[in-house]
Picture 1: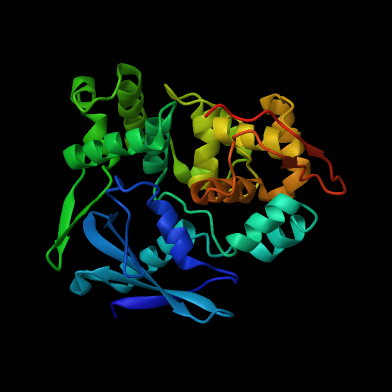
Picture 2: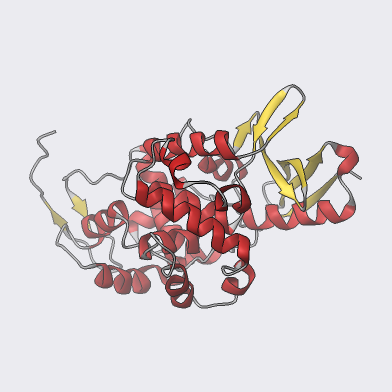
Length: 329
């Protein structure tokens, strides 16, 4: 047995979710080609190629999961791969409840229709989620992912299958013992380099336990992660969303998400992070993470922008417009 099938709740857009893992073309770990998602991933001490493909029907979507080389795909490893796919593609999130939540929200209703079935794409391990978020701090995604590529090429392992080379994200031990200067040589500043090394050490030693964190409430997780060097609320909220799969997090510390909420939900009038979180909780209920995801999806396609323009308030039962000054470019 070298593959198995995993059912997903409808609606489910596998391709849209898989493409979100490749936020820029600099992405080196997550591959999506000809309708198949693939990555080199460690299952225990064995590095294997993890493949996920769409299966089933529109009304009964499913995924086919396989491991290569197939001779190594024991039932236990396939079960682990199924668990990984279940998490990474958020197959159990009930997006029909999201649709009901945003039914009276003009903006989010349109975004949900445009991106129906897009799931939270979740980084495979806690260390990968933290490292990616640290790399993304205060710089453009394209720049961060260039640094990620260098990090993966320098510290990650490689796997060749069918003549193609796949790169695995570095495991904690490879960075826990790395000199900070070796990371700075990749172009990282000292603060990020030290943060990555210390986070790797916390994960390797067990001081940071993903299983234990998963049983905590959101604010408890944020507090625990914020004890790490270089990790604050911004980083912790993205980890809550894109690793732990919490659906009720609107990352108000993020400049884009803060700006989008102010523009589309408060007619451009400033709000504090705390006010945005409170209002997002009322607006999106248990689906703040998906509101953030769909705003990002809208940004990628150009339907959501922070440029000044006529804004239709997306508050339920409110319909007012405001003419903002034209941008000077």
